[in-house]
Length: 549
Ligand code: ISL
Ligand code: CA
Image (cartoon, rainbow, N blue to C red; front, side):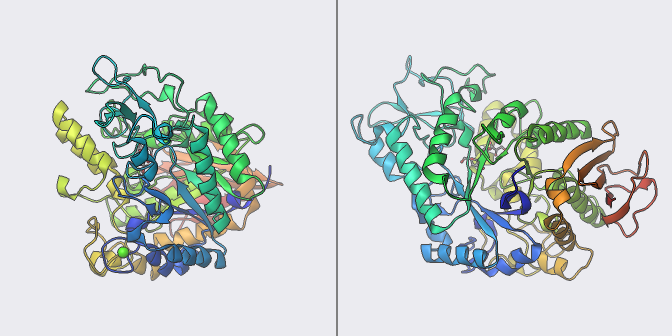
């Protein structure tokens, strides 16, 4: 197994809009991140995944890029970016950028030219089709609104947008478009960035002829036709070409966000010899609590299914490498979703337990900002507090189907805005995130849950994360050792072993809110646990122990 930096370091994901506002306009910015570099270093993380900071009209908070070569004005300037990159590298922290090239903004110069006429040289940078029988060219649904097609009056043709209308899909079949993308990627590499997390990158290759999807239609009759665009054969050609043009000769990370990916497909995408990605973000765990109506119809998650997902992906990544995460900017807060927030004591304990359970698996752990404080979901008072386009569109659609109450409950549990409330730095107004009015409300629990408070408490979630990350940073067995599941049938305890060169760690987590009995006490000594006293066969609710022998 090849040893590299991105397998050995813990990553930290920053959503810049919500991380730290340095100039008081209520929007997080690059200077804000720079102010917090020592905080990041003190966590022990070795790499950052930075969500998009490029020029954007923010229909989808930066995932709709207007100019790939420019920094978003609200976030700062290119000089600020250079200072950030230097500040990170001085501290030996790598920077992985977000790259959104499945689509651009409709305000991108390419699209503005493309929509002008059928003969415009940029026409083919996007996917244009005639309507069929007075309706859309096919039955594809968008992730954010009923149909993936929007009719453009200028030429009377429709353009494809798998996400919002302001996010037209780029046409990867066009070699000129591909060359522009590679040149742009190389400009960022030449600046010194250490890799890319590529947004919905496994959806760039659409089946020829754009055939109708076969899946169940949404209320408006459209189908999320992932079988027509996710992990299609041409994806491999495009990624190999991208890598040959951009990655060759560089020690940079190629990380793909890959919805609709089965473990079998994942193994192929990641294979050390024949694959195209260093790591991917699959979705099985994030969909564990989807109900019959999907994401905003949550059902309780099951430990048996959790273990199945972990075990399947641990083996799917045996000849490659896995990513380990409980949440990101599209998900609600881990402790509210997978842990317990009934009491302050259980919030702290379960946040630590979740960290242990995830970080010591084989793969690279990703900490989403605020997770290291055990930040929770927000009780948004009503719809007017919601900022996320996905949530707003889901509510609009629910009004048509008569499911508003249910979707609202879904948003309170799983909405993307839970991840996007301001990072809770201190007990000062708006959690110390801004001196102005934040673009999205702060979670009212910030006077109790914040980094300053955690800093001064030896038993805080923050200080536990520091210990855990330090342990993994310095231990080859935890980084590279093999994985073995333990007590797979146990209904409360999640347990596994990591072994290398005669050294074994046993990780034991009670993922339930009740006391649990271990079948046997693992050999070795406890090197980390989340309780004052971790001994005996009985585990307290959400107790976690790490044994070493
Ligand atoms: O959030 C989701 C479900 O929980 C997904 O539908 C999500 O939209 C999908 O995973 C793709 O996400 C990425 O691309 C989107 C952007 O809105 C997300 O923030 C990004 O992570 C479009 O660029
Ligand atoms: Ca600002």
